Amino acid sequence: MSDEVEWWEYDDAAEMAAAVAGDIGFIIESAIEARGAAVIALAGGKTPVPIYEKLSSAKLDWKRVTIIPGDERIVPLGDPLSNVTVLAKYFLPKGARVMPIVPNAIADYKAAGRSADALMRDLHWPLDLCLLGVGNDGHTASIFPGPDFDEAVNGPKDTRALGVMPDPMPGDAPVPRVTLSLAAITEARALIIAVRGDEKRAVIETAIKQGRTSAYPIGRALAGTELPVDIHWAPG
Ligand SMILES: O=C1O[C@H](COP(=O)(O)O)[C@@H](O)[C@H](O)[C@H]1O
Image (cartoon, rainbow, N blue to C red; front, top):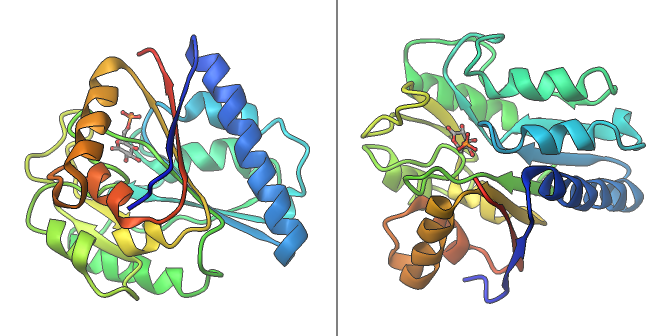
C-alpha cells in the first residue's frame, strides 16, 4: 500500500497540464540519463489530452522514448475511441516510438489481450512511468468490474496485458478493452494519477479509505504499490 499519496490541486486543466507535463518530462530525462531510453505508459480518455499537448512541446530526446497506451479500447486504429491514436497524434511527429497494443481490432477480446501481452515482451520492464486516469466509476487503465476483474488484479505477475469485458459497460466508450494488468502497473518505477472533477476525487478518496479490499480498481492500484503516488486534480 502506498503510504505516501500526495494531492496536487490546480485552478484549471491548463495549470494541471503544465505541472504534469513537467513531471513526465523529468521522468523521461532521468530514465534516458540512467538507462539510455525511456518506456512509459500513458492514460487514454479525454482528461490527459491537454497534458499531451504540453508535453509534446518539451525539448526531449524523443527518439529514445517508447510510449504505449496503458489501456486500449478494441476499435480500429484511427477510430475516435482509440487511445493510441491520440498518443500518435502528439508524439509520433516528435520522433517517439508510439506502440499500438491492439494493432488489429479482433472480435475475440481475450485473444487481443494475449496478443498485447506478447507485444509487451519486446519492451524493457519495469515501465519508467505509468500515468493513470480514473473513471467516475473508479476504473483505472481498463481495469473494470466484470468477468475479468480478478484476472486483472490477481493474475500471474508475468501477465502484463489482458483482454477485459467491462460489466457494466462505460457509457462513453462501450467496447471491450485491453489493459495493463495491476501487476504491470504497480511495478512501474513511477505512478502518476491525473483527474478532473469532484466526482472522481470523491471516488479516489473513498477508494483510499477502503484500501486493499476496495471494490474500485483505482483503490486496488493504490493498495498494490509501495511507491509514493502523486494525484493531480483540477476542477471538472
Ligand atoms: O476509458 C477510459 O477512461 C479513463 C478515464 O477517461 P476520462 O476521459 O474520464 O479521462 C481513462 O483513464 C482510460 O485510459 C480510458 O481508456
